[in-house]
Image (cartoon, rainbow, N blue to C red; front, top):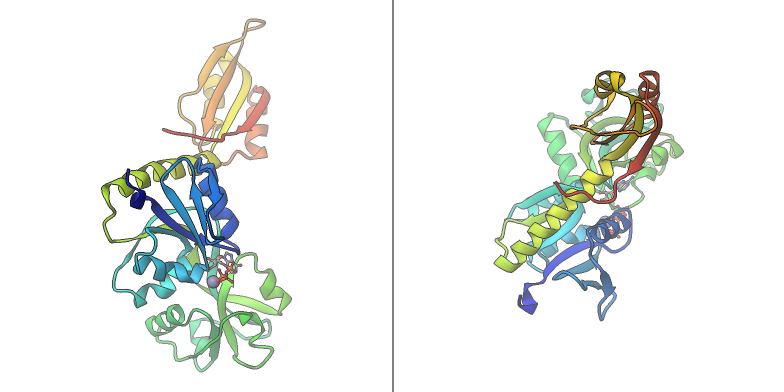
Amino acid sequence: MQANERLTIAIQKKGRLGDGSLTLLQQCGLKLYPAKSSLFYSAENLPIDILLVRDDDIPTLLADKICDLGIVGENVLQEQASQYPLQFESIIKLGFGKCRLAIAGPNKFDYINLDSLNGKSIASSYPNLLKKFLSQNNIDASIVNISGSVEIAPQLKMADLICDLVSTGRTLSENNLKELFVLLQSQAVLVKTECALSTGKSETLAVLLRRIEGVLQAQESKYILFHAPKEALANIQRLLPGTEAPTIVPLSCNDKVAVHVVSREGVFWGTLENLRNAGASSILVLPIEKMML
Ligand code: ATP
Ligand code: ZN
């Protein structure tokens, strides 16, 4: 493979998506070493370079073909999408950086429905998404475009309401604000431009994608082991969430069997209690590190 066939992926250098992006790539087996500048990591074992940037710059870097792929929030992608002639292809949702873009207002604001927003001013760093939302819903509200610390705008009388990213809602409540309406649900996605990649880069992307899918599958899956009387098996199997055919091994000491099964869904305490009530014992639930189907 030629030197210029290295796949370049832009990720956030520092911030809410930075650690998650790096961890995911490392879980995919990339051995990453800082290259000559602090702007890059270079993978030793796959032809991949990682570019460390501000998340807002990722759509531009993709559009300008500085990088082939990026890991960015859907919120940023959708806010900036209208600025670029080429559409971005969101290849896979990555399950971290989850948040929502929501309109919020002071606790005492009398909100009934979207009509309550008419005549109000709304501070946001997402003017494009907000403008689109207001026009789609025939709301006559003004937008105050500010970057950073949007949540203090109502206290400073810069705007009546805000439209900002929310995850736990703690920042809102600390500022005496309440969430009124969600415009967009967002999470980190792996994105690429619609530009075709060279054959070498496409091959590397295929390997990477398979591994990302494996990591995501493994995160959601658990390996469950338990002992059970043979006659209880049919009943027990109905209680196991998202599982395929279990491996059943006879135990030498008594007439019980050992059951090994992979569950593709969350395994809760309630599930274990139900299993136990149905006759299962010595129940173990183990995390799965890697998975390839
Ligand atoms: P940068 O310096 O890279 O521009 P930033 O201040 O824009 O950093 P962060 O606050 O780290 O960025 O947020 C990056 C992304 O994390 C957001 O665009 C969003 O996709 C996601 N995110 C998840 N939860 C939240 C949240 N509660 N507030 C803001 N962003 C969140
Ligand atoms: Zn940013």
